[in-house]
Length: 431
Image (cartoon, rainbow, N blue to C red; front, top):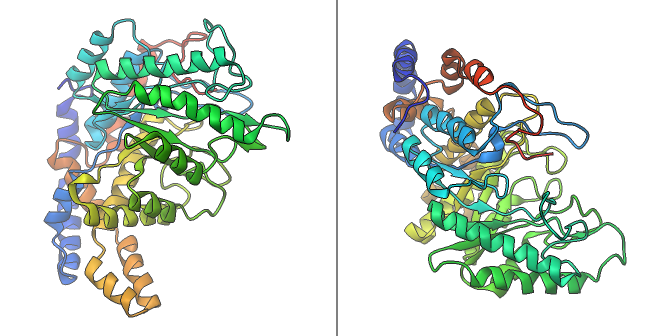
């Protein structure tokens, strides 16, 4: 695997952190041992965690009003892959990249796959784009894509999704994520039932094109850009459509795609119970689909989501393998730093949820000991597992402190020098 950051620099960084990390790790290990928890087992479990990074996330995002380009942001898919490789090298938790077409469509698919192999990266689910018109397309998606009243527009959208499947198959991906902005901004604008019927008609054609070992993930979103009625607005509609399509169709949960204060962990439990939980887009939200850094607003909710995932994994065993991906828009931070921090925060919740004594929790629930059952979760959530995460990274060849090591490497300065700003050449694709 090609190392983007000098391994000697990473080793030097880790050596400076070693004494403090060992002391913190030993102290945490003693505390956990008194609870009957083996820190080494948790560290080994932490090393199994993986979350994909979005190709578009390494570029600078935008607001509804403007976009402010960042220094050295990637201008093409190969530069995106370099940035993603940096994230994985330092965190050791992001071995796969999720591509978005046509933003990331390569002229030579095998060249891209070879570049990924050289960087030690694989490809997660590929994403289609029928929420945005492209320069060379014949029919506009202004009034819908897979649900459009125009048969020609629907056919165009279906063809694009099938092309995404073909590109993903060549790259080694195993899933397609479909999100559409289709809906209505005014009552009467469209027939609500008819729109969903057309969506299913279109999705059946896409589903039929899936390879045998592929899945299609249906992503729902409460609002935006369809503010009156979004066609796939909630988990119930997503579940109904996935059920109608068949076993290879599953639901994708984006943490920002719900009404404020929605009990997302319960949605996770329901979808897992009925075998339709396909995966996640991890981010955080204060008001709506904010696409903020994971764990930056409501880390307890993130932990509670993983608590349900841990319960489902215990029940379902090895068959339970939801796809994890970060989905964020970075407007005021270095995207690489934000994605590294987010990968660590999602991994943190994964490890904290693994500390919950499931047998004890089940007993407390059976006894209706409400307070102690809640405290059993809070005890795990309040435990600072940072030493476990850092030790897992160091043992895997990553950095004890990814952001500090990244800043010391000067990677952003080198990227700014090698990637001069050029109008229309941003690799972000967002706004």
